[in-house]
Length: 155
Picture 1: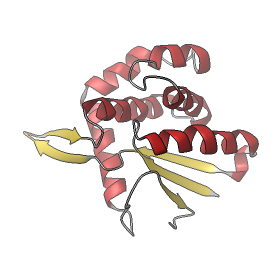
Picture 2 (picture 1 turned 90 degrees about the horizontal axis):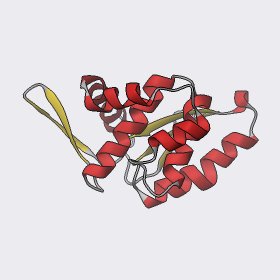
Picture 3 (picture 1 turned 180 degrees about the vertical axis):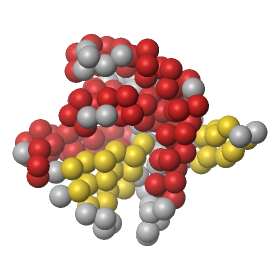
């Protein structure tokens, strides 16, 4: 089964879905039974200002930062089983944007927080977020709310 989750890092319903349903399901099922793709963007908007992508998020700049942190984490870790526990930690904690180092220490000490931070602050993070925007905008039917779950390509 292929599951794609379109979500926002600070959306209360999204956080609840990731922490209480998706993470638990992923832990219980054999790896080959479920392939998960996470797309942190949701109801954000993007615009290109002087060849730089800028984002406005439903829950403010902090959410844009959280989306970018999770996107860069996925990019740096590559392997779902390496980054999903960290995302679970971020989403279940008090601050998605301030707990990266602590979550990495516990769930993925092999990952370099400095590389993730460089991604967030550089052009790579913006390009990855632009890709998330494209994936979200390509949804058919378009998403009406988040979390928005697509299973095997079907809503």
